[in-house]
Length: 563
Image 1: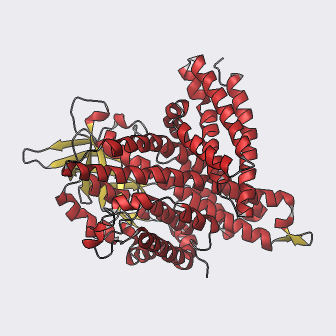
Image 2: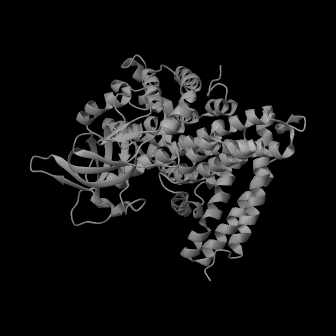
Image 3: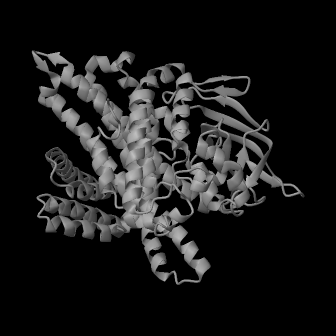
């Protein structure tokens, strides 16, 4: 039987290549956590075995039980009547299956029923779930609601909300966007007011809220009257109640199984998470890093579903006496799809490493402080991890979601006219993947968020490290990747010398594309011994080298200058 983990060679190899030993040791307190929790691993080998077993179980459930429900979920969608949302029957079944298997609390602490897995494993799971049904990701993929409560909430909030989130009995949602305040969060108008008794209440309207009918809402609201900057915002835990009214559910192009709601808060009781005035600048920024990677993983999972469908169709569809996969034009489309998927996956798990390291170091430093131990060394590590994460989070989200859209488009093209028909299912994947370049910040927003770090070449040390390893292995691609770096430096130096912020912003997409391609090229080229992968790596590097030259020329010849 098909398994969405063990029968995906690149995902399996990616898992095996994850460099998690030091991170897991930190998070498991050098594996002394097993003294308090029977389920905690006693060594990294045991932890890795647990992760693999979980991924294999999830891969089987998703392939055998959930993926067959996808057409029905898409056709049925969600229903909205009398202020209540009902999920498609297939979504209800899928949620039950994931809950019974214990996957709804993947990253949450064990004391509340969670698995306490690192984010890297969670993103593997999001890939697998999204391949089965893309719309299911918003139920499965909002586990960062619980993680934020676990990391920044008090004991009372954790005890009240985490067990239900870990068991799957409760579903979470992050509530940010408002009419007139999409990416511009400092324009938020939903108000949080505190009574004399200390009770917080929320008033106002939020819209475009994925899974807004959830049970536990994390709401960003204006808590400081008279202020209009980002420090006027605090984050609140708001349980579902009659004071949280669902006004409408959007009719969307795709992700029909995921309700996107408009919410009205009318004196809705809520609880402050963490400290006032840090709702965005600390807590939501932490959440956004993870959320961007989650959407990247969702996009890759959708692209994987499209790739497999296209491969199977090309192998069985005959024209002129042979399967169409034997025609070079189709074979190259299939290679393009795999190249987009593998390069995106390589970037995603590079970013996931720095996210996992940052979280582990945050926890480790907090423990050292309570012991009165010096924290200078881990703080230096944390600074590096944070800088890299703050670039990779937006950059990976941009690159991976754009690549997944290309992959799904090319997969539909493999089907020809049949790809336009609903019976093949490929048109649903094209519809579903489209939003990934839009929600959690559009591609344009992600490029803008990446620009300063790219101009600063903050991955230079990482590039040097990867370059040295490739050179030592006598990789035939190392000189081509060095040419990519030369193109980047030429463009960066030109933009810095030009001293025109408006031009830099207009040219940003080209520069970020080149920079991301350097990292992806190094990451793809370092895996040796698999002829198929080496073919894809060579294809990617040669294509990226040619594209960088063209993009560099556009920048230096001032294509983006205003008339």
